[in-house]
Length: 457
Image (cartoon, rainbow, N blue to C red; front, side):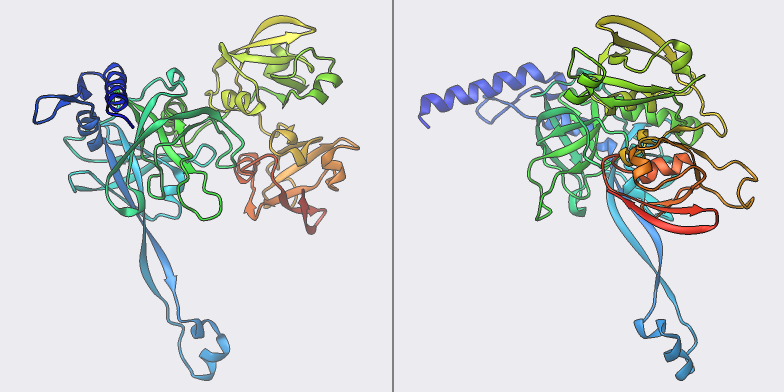
């Protein structure tokens, strides 16, 4: 590169960063007094809010020979078991210094008996779990400590592709590490990482141990919680990482702090992303948006006036083009909230306001909203005293002949006991067991006392 081009490149980068960074990250001076772009002031300001998380779990350990009962009897050796402490490292972000609330990922805490948070200064604090939500992979911890630094949550809807971002976390247990990059894409879904997906994609380096750490903008605001990477084959970083947007994290955090869980309501509709086949079947003029395939009688959607064939194009003014986006809007809205739906009906635009309502006891929902393999089935929780009076599970209330669920041999009265090897005592657990609605689904079914397993592909 010529000297002239090099000067132009350096000048351009300097100008770009100077326009993007506030007073907390103004260019520094080199020994000769020349201005140099640097993120150091901003990083110094926010990094104390990013913590290391260590989890401790009791694990049974036994000599393999001791697992053989014949060996123990023959040599008259009593069963001997010991316990060891297993640890795993992840990251977290202090978002409320006064109350000691720390945001992280649910998978960072998997199987933990105890959790310890270590600040950048090296101070360790015992953490208590406030609540965790598997369906968004978000959890809130609480620590008791003074002089904590918090990160302010940004409005992540203001993010644009190309914005500079910085990832801070604890990759591979090395200690706090800072990487930088840009927002590569927004609204990523269908990755199978969690049920409610709306990921920020970034090329800022994210590695194992970064989970739960901070993705910040150049103003030092938290725009996302680093969660996953796309790692084909070898398992290393290939420059594609994902973070949960701050707006989603804020909504989930508020419910976890208030209730210890996320209380999801329902709208009472079946939905599907519009594709050319659906557009033709419903005689639609558009090939994007979310078509309402069914409306449950008496539901909030029914009362609001929604009809099968309506195409939802926006929720609360935000455009929706995929069913996952509408599912996110409903699933992350608290019970009692009202949402404004912009729809197209017979080519005419309309606005309808509907309330997110609490699922009623025994209420049946469309199985297709959980997995495409359950399309055509109506599912509900097993009522108290139903069955043998002790059993828990999800009842197949109805099955439409010729549907995917019917073809999969599900029949009315079947009770789903397990899904993907996880117990499903109710619909909430069934939803949690299905990471991706398009993936294969393995079900353990009780049909009038006969237990069998089916795999739906």
